[in-house]
Amino acid sequence: MRISSLFIHILLSAVLTLHAEAFSVPSMSMGSPTSFCSDDALKDCISRAEKQHASEFNAGEEVFGSNILQNSQDGHPKQWSDDDFISYSVGKGNGGPSESVLNNGHLIFETKEAAIDESKCEYFIRMARETIEREKYAEEQQLSSGDGGTQDQQNGRRTNSELGEARLSKLPSEALGELNSLLQEKLYPILTNRFGTEEVTVYDGLILGGIAPTTSQPVHRDASLLTLNIALSSPDDFAAGGTYIEGLENHNGLPLRIERGQLLCHSSGVMHAGTSITSGERWVMVLFVIAKNEAQIARRTHAEGLELIESNLLSEAKLTFEAGLSAAPNDHILHMGLGQIASMRGEEQESMDRLTKASILYPASHKAAMTAGKMLEAKRKPRAALRRFDQVLSDIDDKDLLDGAWMPLKALAWDARVCAGRCALLCAEEEAGQWNWSIRERTWTKRHLPRAIDRLRTALMAAPGDEYMHSMLERAEYLLNEANDFPGNN
Image (cartoon, rainbow, N blue to C red; front, side, top):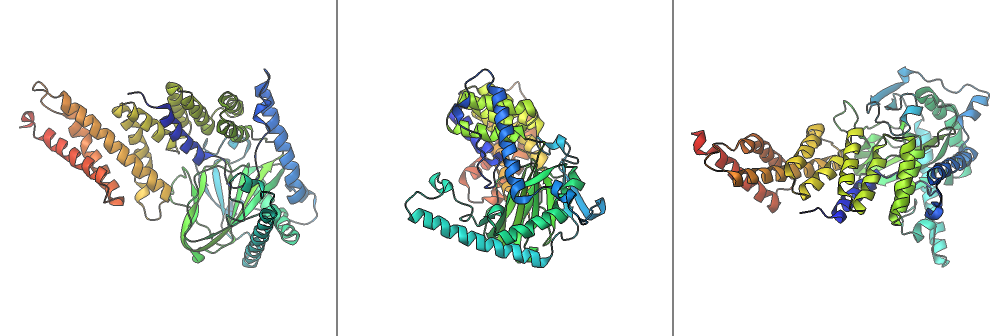
């Protein structure tokens, strides 16, 4: 049975949706998809990205200033040192496509002390609430006027205010002044100290308010070079929550939680997600920072490529992703994008090759390996598929079973256990069907089926009423007992 190209496309689309640069920042469109018309299309794509970057930097600098302004001002901004931070690592090479232009691009830094005091946290929460209400009112007025509402509303997307978010550039002028003072006195110096950035500005950002229960974000990378995340609420104000960092070393897959006024900063290419809260209310300020001399071709071409795929312009999307890879050949997300295009074209081997490449380049993510495993299983290659699921579960190492584990990690591990159990059962069935009196033992079944049974039992703990898993477990136990009762074992 040949696997359906539609099936592969659905799997890959889901993966790329989770990896897409998200976070309700302004539109990242680079122009009309019809602009691909010359032999120099690849250079044109890169040129568009560079022009968009220059425009964004100038716009950000106009609103938020830059660290060059800070360096030219009188006064003495705070000086930071290693003693002021706790550092975490995702491993070299896992900091995103722009890691190489940063010092310590694979590290996440957490301030040991609050970067802003409690009164300032309260102030920014109050300003965010006012901004959200003002924007909601303006949007309602725009809708009632009959002009179709905002661009987001016209495109069927929820606006920032509907999501409980205040865009920093929409804050009152007084609040912008306070924020800019904070940038000049503390935040820009942190980025210079930690990442060696020369000329940076905040492109934009958000103050996000969440009232429980909330849902976790998908893992994503931000549409910027560096991300600053400031806790405006105390951890005592909510339960659960935090920032999940994919591939974080020596942290057991648990989210990072910081005290009020403290901040995290990291390369925006580090894959991460805000996690859900189960009670209370949580406010966070997130600032997206770009550098004048780093156009971030990879993440911009990825955003454009997704738009082209949505318009079914696959050749143009392929060229766009390839333009990104010319700047960042090891960007796993661009390889996955090419895999999606291949699946849509029915090029199954190319799609599989791209998924394999993405898994090798970025082993911290298990989505490419899971998609490849499901493709192999659908093509009736259960042993090859099982090897993929085995690797995923080995990498997770039961971290999903820890108290406080990130819910999407739990879901992914559950899926991997079920898939691995099903593939092992298929292999055992195949071995049982091939048995004859000249084969005295079912070696594969006795070696591998016990682990599959353990995995199915673990999965059943989260879904005890799942009849399908119960039937798989019963059949696996029967086949294992049958293998152990062979005459050759007596």
